[in-house]
Length: 72
Image (tube, rainbow, N blue to C red; front, side):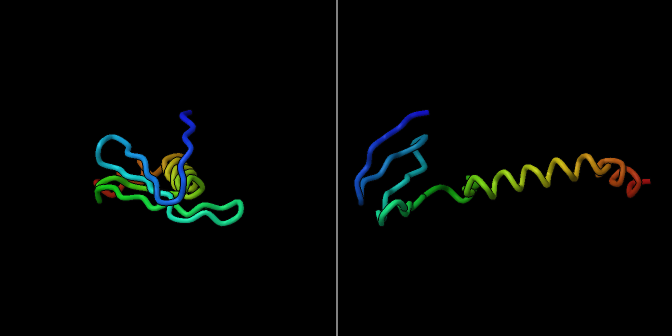
């Protein structure tokens, strides 16, 4: 993991097309602004993990078999 120090108003660039800017610092919270192309999904980690969990559950429930059944 890369750890960086940034002040309010400062930014960092990822892969030439994603910019993360520190918008506000209040106590132990920071507000970040993320500018990324529309085709790049940006999620909070807890939301991303929930999406992964639900996708995995859908596959385990026999989602593929259900799709095969629809095609018959």
